Length: 442
Image 1 (cartoon, one colour):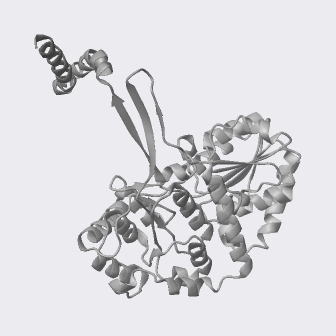
Image 2 (image 1 turned 90 degrees about the vertical axis):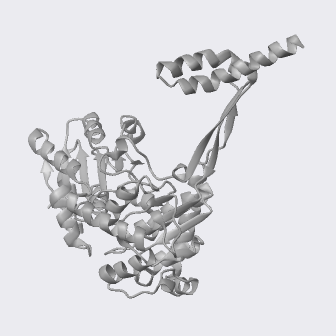
Image 3 (image 1 turned 60 degrees about the vertical axis):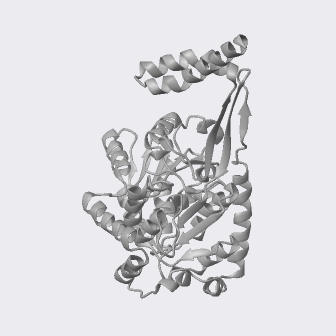
């Protein structure tokens, strides 16, 4: 089910790495045309389009007055959640909020030279939209991870969209929204929900940024509306790399590979190890533990297509391979995990030691689990407070400083053939010079 790749089988190793990198959201031309039509329909017809598209794609009949979920419906769904889940949600929210509070940046200003004051003013965006997907699994943890940084940033309005019946079928999602005091919720999903958030309808006011995972239609819609609104990312399939040596427990490593593989059939779970015996034991454990898991079919497909146990000569070689893939998640289970992590340049999140499985980050530890996928860790980072903030530059020049720098500013403007730019600076100096001459003549 999961393949062991020998130290010297470089061709097979390259094939696995190439196939893993090739996974992406398939935003093909036909898909983009189809989603463009949906977006234009919502832009032009508003609520009527939402109602018709919901009937078409979800087989649910709604009236405009039913698009927004009332609080009673939310509470009725959340009431079905077990007390231990509620307790865990509250603790997770507290820990995640505590982490994100450290990300907040304060406005600042400096005076680099006399007569010049420069700075940045940090302020939250006015409205954020969160997409909560339906499908085979519900993710209250993703609700928490998207809502908390927006709330810590101070976003005054947060709107949630989710497919019809999602809150009924997934009471833990309803409970998470209730615990987070999110009350603006709409039972509409798919690309049409993204369009509504981006452009607004009679019922759903537009937002400034859209975050949250979704299927390929949601991903395509987010890509198409980017520019009209901000988005978090175009998320691809999830992934983990585990770097381990002979100190690692094969049962732990196998369990972590399986935890990743159960996400979906395109999830990738790769172990890179220097120890041949560990590789053998992990393969045995993977096969044994898989038989006990309800999502066995998904796991088997994932590991067959995008899973591997790769044996290398050195841990430095393991780090080089990891940097090449730039994974969403990286676990390091070695003697000197922190020292090894110093060789990692590209990873969305790094989990150190035998007792830090990826699941602690998915649910509870505090850092955000919305991470760059598909190699995007080379240039992007986890979702955080700053994704919901704007920084505005503040500039103030004195008369003397403008007089001193005007010739240089004008020279640069004229070098770009922008004479009006130069004039807008020099006209002030001319005016100041005439004022001085006039005062001397009086």
